[in-house]
Image 1 (tube, rainbow, N blue to C red):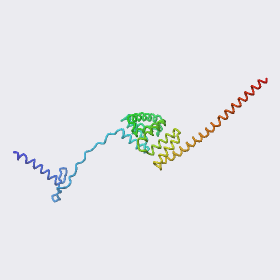
Image 2: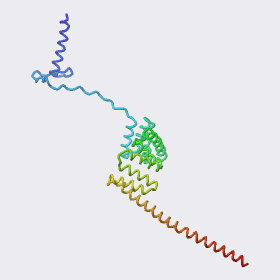
Image 3: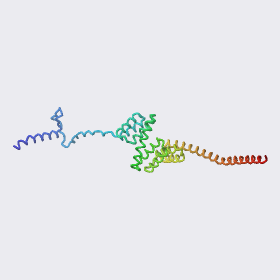
Image 4: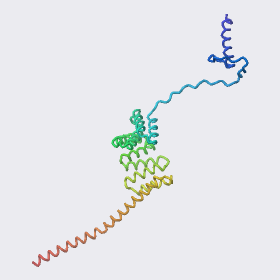
Length: 258
């Protein structure tokens, strides 16, 4: 009885094996011709289709990266929507606020830009409090300060960032821009020169350096003129005092004669 029950199963298994070796398939409507060459035993077996992988769910960082790409392509309205989508997923995403502010500024929405920059400052300040050695956070905080008009704070943050990473021409250029806003042209010239030392073809830095030189020349001319006036001022003051004393003396003499 055991042999009787096992025989059909063995026959079925054998039939399947033969079918596999000869390449037959139950899904094929046309049978293999009798005179066709048999499939070699060592022929490669067709691999099963890979499992379908679902795409990862979008996250805030992904939307920010998308927004940056759209911003570079001057697709500002779409970039704005991408940054807003990032903030829906992460309402404390500092970079999303910073880039949102930049996009609002380009679109001429000043009030919205300022509000976004303020949020960027808030969350980047939190980030550097948590990790003061986070170079990216320091440099982004510097940019946020620059955009809010806090140029001295921007200078300080840029300098901290430069100490934490390999120096690069763009950061030195941004530092020079912050110094320029403070009319500290000598420091600005130094920053622009550092940028050009790293990248001699940095055209914006070359232009900015010339502007800083011009600004510094104006300051020096004003200083020289001011010092000249200061030197002349005591002489005029003494002369006036001498004339006043002489007039008082004449008055006293006249009173005595009377």
